Image (cartoon, rainbow, N blue to C red; front, side):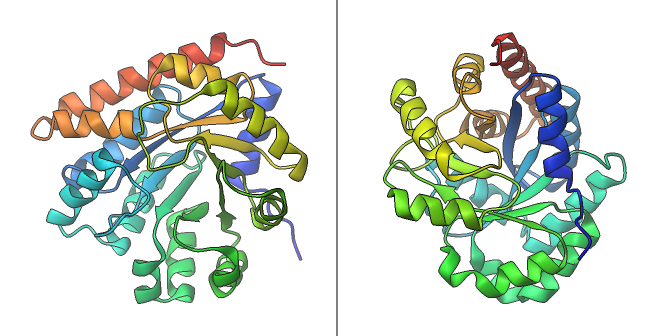
Amino acid sequence: RVIVVSRISNCFEQLEAQNKKALIPYVVAGDPVPDVTVKVMHKMVEMGADLIELGVPFSEPEAEGAVIQVAHERALEHNVSLRDTIQMVADFRQNDKTTPVLLMGYINPIEKMGYEEFAKLAKAAGVDASLLVNVPPEEGVELEIALRKQDIDTIYLVAPTTTDTRAAYLCAKSTGFIYYVSLKGTTGASTINMDEVETRFNHLKQFTKIPMVVGFGIKDGASAARVAEFADGSVVGSAIVQIFADNKDKPDIIVESVGALISEMRTAMDLVSVG
């Protein structure tokens, strides 16, 4: 079997060579209107994002806090589907062949589409990975096989409450990178004890050789930089999605404001002396 060097592994290798950490923003496809998404994706990359998490709109996004739940609702008002989301990646790829894009969401729309169909469409569009919040690996075997055939990475979440045995299993099943959820609860929660997160993160690192990033609760340059001190990357979602909420009727302001936040985070993360 030919080993394909994925965009994701390539990205982390290049960052490591530059002593930098990954900045991974999350946006919901089609929020607040479909034609903003690809523009925002390009702007984020221009301002220093390394990978993009694209949320697939879903009616019951149970892991999300209020800010992101409402973003899913805004996207669904425009009937943005899994197929539309994949098409947005294809549109993004017309001008950006290198930035990894992962689809984050829930298994339900994929079940409806069918695993093989999803994997083929995603690969053709240039999707690099899939992160599904409501699929434990035991139940994701068929999907994982379909994705592996298309060289699409499967990323799993590890939580603060995950036992060592379970963490070792999830780490072994993940490809691309591992997503460590920094806190108990939903996305966008306000208080996060970074020292606790660091201790737990460092403990979990023994279970994997691939990069591990931290998400949930990172909302500005300071928190992104603090995570960059110990993790391979910072994921930021609610802080970006809040900009969409505040400027629902002003797409141009969304693009510029998201760009400014990414730029602030990038600068703060790069000031952290790595190693």
